[in-house]
Length: 92
Image 1 (tube, helix red, strand yellow):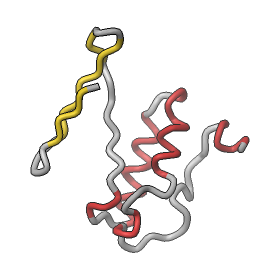
Image 2 (cartoon, rainbow, N blue to C red; image 1 turned 135 degrees about the horizontal axis):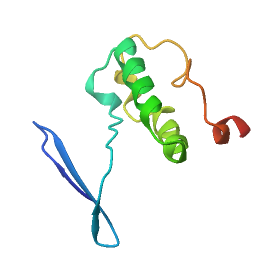
Image 3 (cartoon, rainbow, N blue to C red; image 1 turned 45 degrees about the vertical axis):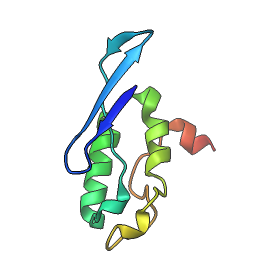
Image 4 (cartoon, rainbow, N blue to C red; image 1 turned 135 degrees about the vertical axis):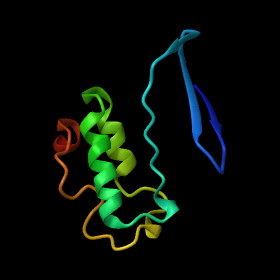
């Protein structure tokens, strides 16, 4: 994976599998950029709705108490409140 991050612009990512370019979807978990709780929940829920079932557990882990989370204003409840957890998360 190649990630080129412009601090004042977008992040560009290229993924290769065995040297062959592969399609990928980026999910940025960046709680430290001044979110409101409502905006955070909306983005979290949209991300969790579109990710593949095989990768959902990893995305749930990323959203569960993310670094920089103290910057999310007006947070109510736990990080994953209101989400349907994947079977792997529920089993733990």
